[in-house]
Image (cartoon, rainbow, N blue to C red; front, side, top):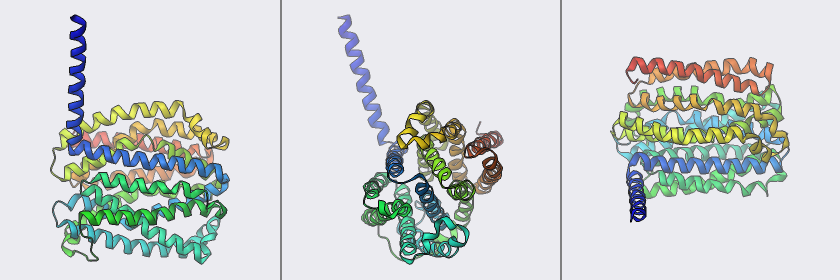
Length: 423
């Protein structure tokens, strides 16, 4: 009887846990976080596999040039976003959603076409290692890839804004096609890697627009009222995000110019692996911003998000720190040289996670000037330290610069939190 009672108690607890899990997944904060997490896990996981195969099929030097091309693509698309990725989420519940979506996609698409043209006109004078873009065929493909990547990016932000993160997951699922494309394009060298990504973005963009049109009607029009009201928020977030994202996006190009093709490849792979740890904090941060924009309680959601991140963060850090060498060895013996850099990046994840949480809080409180100041500190310190550290220590110098930058940001965040009464 006593044993039977214990069994019944355990069964009852399991039933309660299952019910609790089901109820949690109905909560928009957790549901959106789960699909955001799954989408990013899929994207990073497929990206991991993509670079693993690329490292096996292509010489290290070719991988180095490809990373610079792909990072340039990301930088152009981000510059072209003009802050509308934030305004989509913040204002879609205030304005007519069709107008918000159409305006954001139209303007950013035009901006990406302009920025791609400017880049193609100046890149050959700046970087001789990417001289293949002088060929009209490669240049045109790069241009199309930039434009479609911009539309893909904004479609993904639209899914988040509509609280439809399931479709965000689906568009990242389609993006997985880039892996098998590496094989038939190997004859193109470094542009084969870029070509695989470019073709996939074209296909994924068509699919994303199809999904988006099922939810709402996208038109080629601009809502001046939305532009006027969101200008301060968009422009402020644009500056803040540009300061935040640009160091990581231009670093492969800096590595390529300063240390060479092989070192650029080593850095990129180590940085990509460390990104696996930051998926959970970034997903919860985005979900926190989405739910706050719909009027959900901020303090309650912060506590719940912090708890969920802690559960996922520590095992990820331990796993990648102690098995980093084995992971790098999968890419090839050459990539084990980047293990010290990977260790430093992994250990800095505690500080990175804290910074990720302050961003949505400041956005929801419309304290964009404070956010700009924080990201300016990050931009200045990270780039300011990277050059002398890279020159003196090689690629691990970036790790030192990254760690020091985030320690400083943590101290700044604590000071702001005390001032604002958050802690």
